[in-house]
Image (cartoon, rainbow, N blue to C red; front, side, top):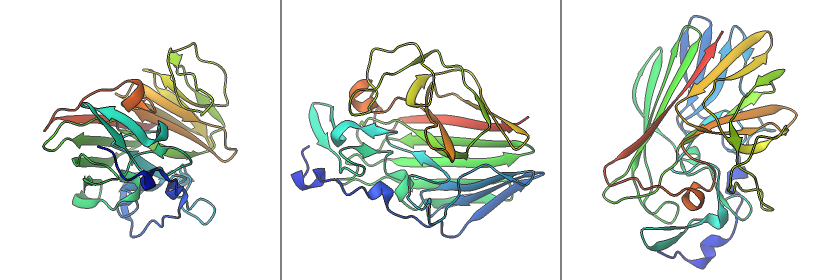
Length: 279
């Protein structure tokens, strides 16, 4: 399917301001988490023992890709030129950051609250079936808090036809004083800054890179230690900004539709979990 060539024009819409709207607060013991269903189903803030862990919404950080922790789906990171081949056809997605399509559609759409309690919320999103994403499908997420732990589950289910899908999370952590990260390999980046193969040995940061990783990631800030684990094996770490570090577990690398294509059959699901534990 070829869309109108006009859709190739970049609007940098991922940089447009996005207000949080009404918040849902989850709390257990010393942990409080604010959810913004209308702002891409994202976590707006995490507070543990009075320490804020997220870059929150403000005029400085109002761009929809630059605050909180949001789900990335049905792709994560950039798709080169917004273009990919699937099932014998070529698809062209609108470009929303420079010359590429970035972070999917879920971060810009309001999510439906399906169920909630003081310690959990279930959200759902009907994916579009138009030029923004031609396959449709349904996304779901559960966010729940326990004493000193935040658990997240995320899934995408294909509708009546097969489709590609990559899912993940994009948390904007306030700058940690220390990060412990031990990936086994990394994807080099080309001149456009997009991941390519073959894999290589990890190099020292600062990073805006995707890694193969199966070990916990540790962040230290304000006298607290936070351990991050996930069943995802691809992690993007973006620690170039002075004010924040993003640690992003994903089910596939950036540009996965071109780099490591996989098929989600009609009616099938891809799901992932992400666990934050304060030690």
